Amino acid sequence: LGSGLGHLAWGLYKLGAHVTCTDTPDGDLSALTARVQSWLAEEKSADTAGIENEGRGSIRVQELTWGQQHWTASPISKENAEYDVLILAEVFSLPELHEELVWTVQKLCHANIEIWSIFLNRSFSFM
Image (cartoon, rainbow, N blue to C red; front, side, top):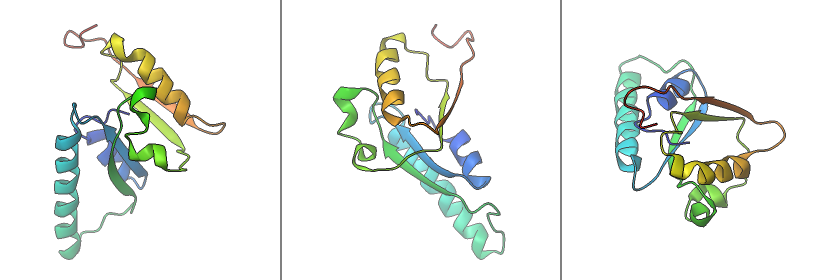
């Protein structure tokens, strides 16, 4: 949730994971989409040069703004997908969005999901 510029998502994809990157239209969604498309194009060029992605995962970018009021605007709301892992990396910097974040996490949860979260309170973390 909140993939930023996609570095973590790309790394997981390269390891063979099937990754859905999310961000908001008001956040980094357009930059994230451009970055992932650029990396995929570079990878395709490398494939034709005989360098293959060993893991053969998949990666896609989807719009997702946290909270019930934004849920139906996301393509994710129309899927029946159950995610194996939900990763929250550096998503706690805006306390005013915590309720929306919790709602979204609860919406995506099921009995077998793993949730990984990390936040480091640094001088530039706004907390």
